[in-house]
Image (tube, rainbow, N blue to C red; front, side):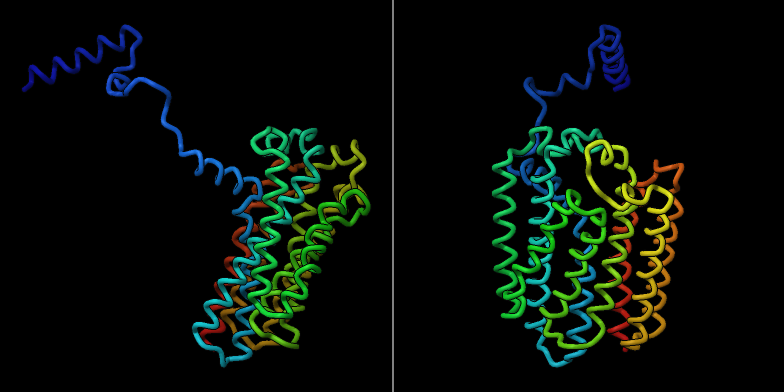
Length: 326
């Protein structure tokens, strides 16, 4: 046994001394295995619309629905399940349509900007026709999901699409682009509230104010890294209009409004201390995010932006627990 083992070790050493990787002996000749083509295309489409960023608005839409269902209090489990399913479908479809439209109309600018030149359209991973078809299918899915959520949601679905598409064009005509992204996201909790049968009340409007100022605030931070490019190419934004220092102040004020709106919801709904703990957690995350970006150091903007993925999840989780324990 020891003789065979030593012989194997010696053979491997001999192969290495000749510049041969001994582990390659067991590999069959030919190209490296690749993921199936369909899986690769799915990954490309998911990257095209940054599918993982659905965690920004979706938790607020579900929170709006949760509060509406709690307000009504008479729905069956089957009704609640399908409401939530179609809300998720509508949210993902609307966001995919909006992001795909954004990538289409900005493809020329993305190709010129070093930060965005590796996106799918500039680098040729997708064609413009593919992107347009993707947007069209997403719109159809969204409208169908709105139809399944009832006549009010169906009637308002074109309005929602106009709002979310307008953001992509706003940078060409107004300095307040980031506010329009906030408005587009603010549709989410109102839509969730209406989809779940909510009528009247302050809840959806406070949620809309919270998510609108939250998203507007972090988008101001994100736009700071493109200030030089935007100035060079005549694009508009809050950092372009006000400069870095004042843009950061605006972002921080917006996030303060976010916390005030979320805290005010506790007063309107009497959700208790668990909900307020969740709001405190959101405040801590936003304070951490703001601390990572300064006028003289924008190197951490991407890390600060990624923190927002935890905000909506934390808020939805603590709100759900607070509602359940009421």
